[in-house]
Length: 346
Image (cartoon, rainbow, N blue to C red; front, top):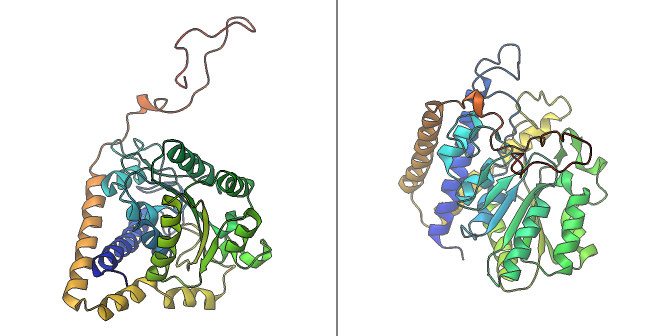
């Protein structure tokens, strides 16, 4: 039986993530209509949203500590919120502001918050190797911290993922891989690009436990993650989890989704994990007033973060080459050593 306080925490995280992304849609579309211009508006560039994925992030991260490492893919906001990433600084990063997590230079797909050991990447499956590295470091230090790598079902054929499973299994590392299966690898149905219906079956090739949650229910995810994370903390090695989720928006903002049948969109709207968890709260004796309080608090937090971020300064163009890898200075003669302190990437 999950404690009521845990259910409330998950509900608030999920509502925060949903409202956050709904508000980002409004901000993102400013200046981009009626003719969609990806470079216009206060949030230029791509924006990948995770509405419909909230149960996986909330159910897994509820078991994690600040020192546990988490990596997320290009659809990261729900995981970041559940892990405790600074919402104001994350929002400032998305708006490209100086006070953002990466000083406005990373954008929404490349967030990093060392205060809670969270990072994400826009490269498919590339969060898996860093998670394995964090798990190996924890094991060598005799710490009980774990690492979790979130990825989409379209990433499970990538070499980075498969090699990470192998290394985690060989060294019995405290890492959990969480596949978020929303049935679509960008615009391609899963069954047309992957030879397994259940991504957790990949675990069998690496002699590790594999488990799947067949519907996006935060309490079911919580229970599956509890077992996997506790096994990792106790030295039992890695686990591969897959969670069925439902993408409520396009692959990215501006995606017309002409490839997607209407019934699939309707199913995503109907199978709402937030409504399911709200029903769980009612069954657990949580009244409507308390549920409304949690939702109101979540929405106020989001509004405060967005308004704060929009008031922050933009980066000084003179700092464009700071905090990034740059080419080293040219050698005066071929083969000559570089001068000491010659490059920002040293």
